[in-house]
Image (cartoon, rainbow, N blue to C red):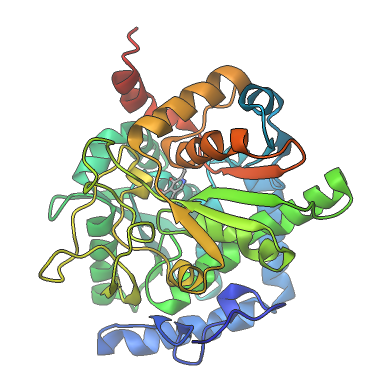
Length: 409
Ligand SMILES: Cc1ncc(COP(=O)(O)O)c(C=O)c1O
């Protein structure tokens, strides 16, 4: 078992074959993709050291995305729950209303510097798709986005947003018509057009280079957070828990990346699905899924008795995914992070509470993290601290939330 090393970002801790801990990740790809992915890896390594590229990225992170995103105390929620002090890194304040733009913009810049004119990507909740459509518009590229039909309909505000940004949307009608199928179709499109297009995987999944690029892009969250914590407390506080939602795993990895050596507790919140059906969920890490291959990488993945990818269910389109990042699989195996799965109902209650007490309307993905915060905070001491990542705004979810909570206009 290969242990996590200190002082090296997790995205750089895979071996020469792209495996984290010798087991998770790598690139299970058709032969025709070997050279394009090798070229992408070489370009990524060079661009990470290219001053012009980094200057352009940093300027766009600041002026186009609006970074740094705020760090604030949730005073009313802390008082209401009566235990630990609760804080938030408010990533939903970014242009595009979620963290997904960090990754999308980095991909568009890589595409631009490698002379590609078209970016292709996947989306579930429409946040990765909107991010890609926005970043493509800002960098003068064409965006082609795949979205499952179920998600296209249930996240209609984002589907509309992508179209208005000028992206081409391909609605996927095969399989479960969700994120898993959208990722498969975008990869298929890339396999057929890899000489002309750049693939921008929307989360920290896929062949190892995509996991690395995404985790690298999102690590800006914890880079900022570490500074903001220092400013607020003068040091990293003792008994600090970092609680975040986990779908593919990009927001949580970005949130944890530069905090991993600080001794804080890392808690990932997957989708527990409807309370009354314990076997309907999207929580491969919480419920002990076996190792398998999905979207070109080895990871813990939900499988049926014939080892086929299992169906998932969640109120949140962004967490409704049967796999997880290879890096999360490693963190789980190493027991560095723990994983839980709040139910749909707990999530909706937490959304309501945060909305009414704090005036912050977190989308259904980070509301899973808020649900866990509501569960653990009252049992903790007043000197303990929790930081949660609010990585999305609920605008895209109001139809679902209103229906579930019985709110009518
Ligand atoms: C707002 C938001 N948060 C979280 C997620 C989950 O993805 P990840 O785990 O990659 O952050 C999504 C996915 O679409 C999302 O839209």
